[in-house]
Length: 97
Image: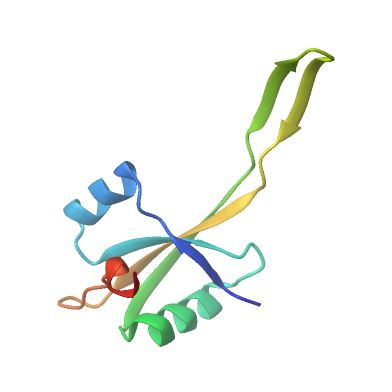
């Protein structure tokens, strides 16, 4: 199971990181536990994780109009993790590009 799916680089998460410089967000596998998320972040980014907060989100409902009528569907459910690292340590998301 690949625990970390992608880092959260949104306007809202950037504001959180500016206010709390040692917090970072990730989209993670829905089956992943906090201990698995902590181990994956420590292994991938070589930092020490102090705390992990998780949130489960339901996928949004989507509707579009086509010539056959309205088509409804949903986006996938997902799980976010906010990871707090030790003071003085930094995760650079752009180093692997």
